[in-house]
Image (cartoon, rainbow, N blue to C red; front, top):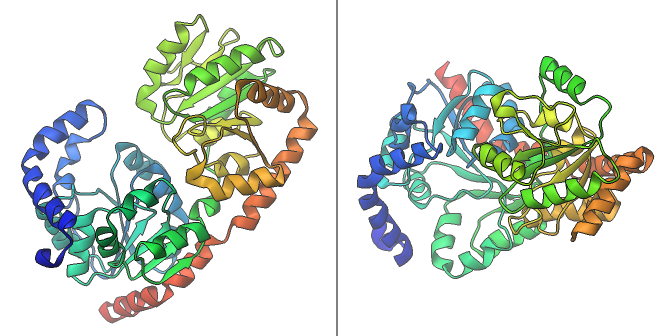
Length: 433
């Protein structure tokens, strides 16, 4: 197989084979950064943490939290067909989400590092019957090894961003080799589909974005009541999934808004919870009063900004505020998913950098269901209007809900596209029974 591969892929395979020797060092370094669970380090080397269950096994891979949550509805659809699921991801936070929010019969494993030896060990152990890759986490050795074994592979909820597309076009033979390994490519949007086709994808079909069909995140009643009591009577805004460079924007907006809303509380949720203490310290150095959720602190009457640096609680925070500032969009990150906030009744303000969810934000902005703010004055004015005028704010929320409903339906389309594979697996299961 290797001799027929494009030169960049052959080089990659050689380098990753050699890099496997550095795995222990890499694991320890990443563990110190909170990015690895050393108790499960064997999974990164392809060792199975559990025995493989009998019968057909559907393997679903999502890079991190967003992709794993996007697969939730798909997983439920497959479970309803009595198919066993192996779910892989690459981050500690995604593993925590799976443990908290997914059924116990879902087998979660960390994806092995993309060394040929580890990939072979992983595939030998699990022997998946069907592989579904969510969005765009394309690991060459994993994909090429699956192809060599004639493992049916489908790219689901496929996304090819405007930034990634020109980079991949510089290596047309390599990306063509990878994408053609998938028997189908189910794309999020027409633009994504056209990019996949141009890069060599086979059987490209636009099925929509699974993230639009994900149910609103849950919230524990006890936790919600406790925070509702702590914030009662105060105007509240959420700064959700913020990245470095955005906390300063949130702080400036908060201080400007306090001139009109003296009791304002801003709940700031860093995209990466491990940054919580550093974010809180930076904000506190400006003289603003801060509380930190990971220390079991609650916002009191004098708290200005509450740094919510915990995992799996976005459903709780979204329920506390009628207005959400979506992070990732005020720097060139590409924006974060606004759907959960909208489904929980919040009006969404965002910055100009939304290319990760361009179709969704474009539709929301056109309908008046979200607001684009490109400078501090506009941001403060928009947040202030929605805090002070509930009917206007609710009208925006109502429009956003309509947009989300119109863009939905990806789950049904995805399951329909996968039906030939699922039928075969059901027949195999019946034969084994």
